[in-house]
Image (cartoon, rainbow, N blue to C red):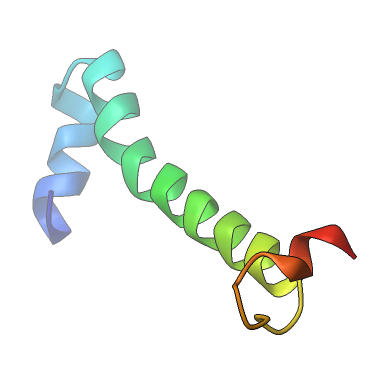
Length: 55
């Protein structure tokens, strides 16, 4: 959905279809931010890549 199409769709489309199509970008964004925070919390990578998970 783009620009005026989104505005028109808010009034004409099925609410369930709208909820799914508009929530997918939000869910992907939350997953990316969560993955970034997970990787950031484990510090610098070690020689084998797994030692940082045990600290």
